[in-house]
Length: 84
Image (cartoon, rainbow, N blue to C red):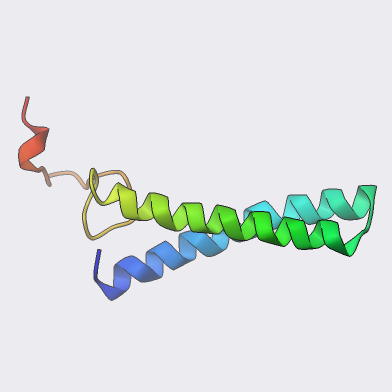
């Protein structure tokens, strides 16, 4: 979790989540009521989603590969807790 590659992958996921949340919210806001306070709220919600993405990437290291933000452990790598 402390490697540069881990944080680059985590940042990529967070940026994608931000964009995937922002685009539909801004589109819906502009189509229904183009008010800047609504767009500001959309940016805030998107930032919250990006923060949750970072937290879920960090939590994934507890179960998946500790050097990857993915929850899926690569084939051939197991931990002592995987027994049974």
